[in-house]
Image 1 (cartoon, rainbow, N blue to C red):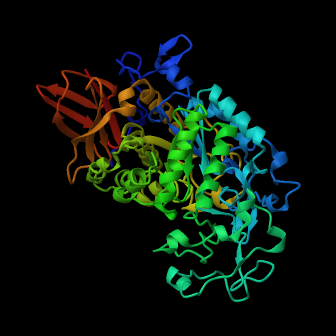
Image 2: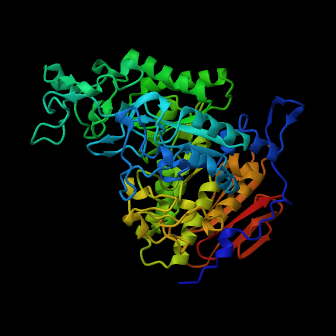
Image 3: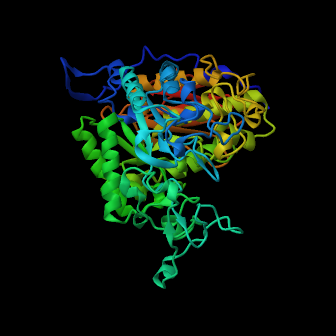
Length: 588
């Protein structure tokens, strides 16, 4: 196997300052300005198009502990107290909103312009199946969870982030609340399961029609724990038992016991819309990521999303953005929620799969061509493929570093590092809005999905985290991992700078240039909507040097990230790339 030089991947010869820029968008006048420069756009968070952003997805509990006094949660509300266990991968670890605030410059210097946090509203801290370090077990939709801080802490974070040009996105839930409702048929009066049972089997709509249904109740000590108060009434829930995540149970069943809201009920639609309008009014976030979208019927989204977008604009947030989690890799399934469902965007699970197949598993890049050929499915009056959120790993499915270890178990440390940087470069330059999963910039790998992909950035006490070998670093998760010298952090900073300086790399129309079965080298272009200017990207996902020949669509080209060899003869380009590297060329 050829030795691979890291310099090719880090883009050591970037010629950013000397390159012509696509004209930046004209925006409504602010003060005496009418047209913004690139620097203005990245300071003016309010008017910045979301396609210009680079997101950082962070789980506050595992990121940074800015206030150790809140580590155990509420001192007055037992349901939101406890769960701190620094040695358990399922426990609270102490990270909080103040901790995120303290690291804003760390993120800004990496090129991050938007932060998406896992849910931060008040949770039921401890349930029989775990601890709410993730924030998805909400009981109060108006208050910050005390493990993370106060409402004022959140407002201060948003104010400070905005002063630095960084947007803040909330992770929201409409599908369910915490597990409070129980069923007489499978629970005792105290809420515990009847001996011999570990779940409540799903009851179908056909069973309900025959009168075979559960009798819901709420244990005495939890009858009034949810807010707003209407959430305490079982009539607003499906009450059909645990979902099997197939068929109708995917829409009606309790998600691992969590109380599944009857989102078809007009009161639920109105109530959840009011809840999130209130959050927009109080905190002025820049957008929402919506959890478990595919577990809610489309009519809910058709009403909810436009209502929230319209309300946000009325509150002075003109570019409020919403994207949903639809855990499906099929563009036909994903696009249904952006067209019929009226969501502006979804997380692009199809992109994640194609990128992992090509850069981590050695499969043909033709899968990328096949994926992007379906981008037209997303087109309608309020959505399009370049609004999709692209990512390489997350808190549920696992980290990109884990997929690299799985796909190339015999590769050396240098190759694994290069695969990470190369796949991130692909995410930054292909269509869509890139999302970096916290810790990936420090080479975190994890041991799989769910809690095995939620390591601490601050020194961890979890043994199963600390025995992992990180990419590009001799450190472990037992160390503090906010190292701006880490090679992936440095690479992302350079990628972000290049993306910021060239609007076409953020918004240009995608165009296939070279894909061939049996070849690991491929090329695509981004085309300026106004100028027609071309930016050519060439990627070699193979472990040996490769050369391709493609048509030249410009008179000349300037290297922004140079290949090993690049030549133009007439209307033909010849490009040679070392193993696991990429080149970026601006047509002139």
